[in-house]
Amino acid sequence: MSQKIAVLPGDGIGIEIVAEAARVLNHLKNDGLDIEMIEAPVGGAGYDAAGKPLPDETLALVKESDAILLGAVGGPQYEALPRELRPERGLLGLRSELGLFANLRPAILYPQLADASSLKPDVVAGLDIMIVRELTGGIYFGEPRGIREKANGEREGFNTLVYSESEVDRIARVAFDIAMKRGKRLCSVDKANVLEVSELWREVVIKAGSDYPQVELSHMYVDNAAMQLVKWPKQFDVMVTKNMFGDILSDAAAMLTGSIGMLPSASLDANSKGMYEPIHGSAPDIAGKGVANPLATILSVAMMLRYSLDYATLADKIEHAVGSVLDKGLRTPDIMAEGCREVGTVEMGEAVLGELSA
Ligand code: NAD
Image 1: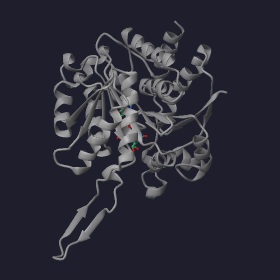
Image 2: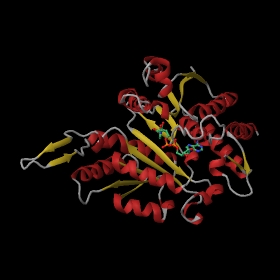
Image 3: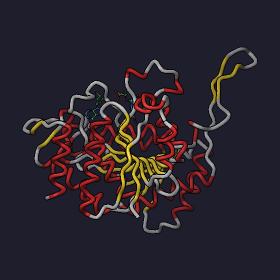
Image 4: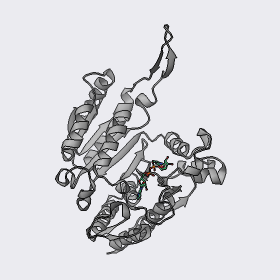
């Protein structure tokens, strides 16, 4: 039976880049990919169509789908809306309704783009790290939280960092499974020298690791991990960490590559159903101009094929096609360099399709 993919372009450049990614998916049907794609509005487009950022029909569709391809949401025309109607609420709603607790953020730097990084090319060329961030627990969700008044009248803010064993175990297993599909090295990042939560985190990760004897497990304190990411990032294969540490480290790792238009991401539930999207936003400054880089979204499709749909060979094929297009010197304006040929969104998409047919 064919697998169902919900296609949610969203707003701004989301529409242009998702169109190219959908063409890639359609093209791969020639290689045996058995899928059905259904499009629905979300974010500002959801508000325009149905008066809320996550329309009921869109929610019903994503619930019955095997995977979701998302563009991006947001735009200046929606900024004056009440908070609960803003486009970003659509995204948060998708994450919580679908129980997407594992956020996968690869930081990959194609050797052809090494000059785009603010670090020296030899430090980052060929970089390929996967950061697995716990997405639905930890200090961002822990209770109690708030701002209260002390007896002396001074106010204090407080949040709660809490992780149960089962929450740690399930994210650790996602990370071990991914490490098995890659270089078989996993670094768990914590702050076990200071935090009890991290002590338990480390204990549970080690225990889960006994089911993955082929994976080499290491541990690093988060402050050292931040330093090592900038010093010699290529030492890492897969990293796993809690929500807040992952939020910070994955942005730092992404920026090592210097090219926001190149980075995909995935958010998975307990059954590997996932939502796949570029890490960038809806880029209102370039929306409608046909110049957005579609490669992050096309690479998100590769992640979807690898992690949700079980077509690893086709995922490899897409990633290889993207590499070949870059080898040929094609660049959208965001990654343009001397001696290369500047192309727009559609031409870049067509070039990938051309490589897939080659
Ligand atoms: P942004 O990522 O949209 O843009 C930042 C800069 O990067 C801009 O100069 C933009 O032109 C450029 N850029 C982004 N993607 C690009 C691409 N594919 N090709 C070429 N250049 C690209 O971030 P922002 O400007 O801070 O936010 C714009 C809107 O997007 C806001 O409404 C914000 O809330 C929303 N947003 C949405 C998501 C999401 O949907 N996941 C994530 C971040 C921001």
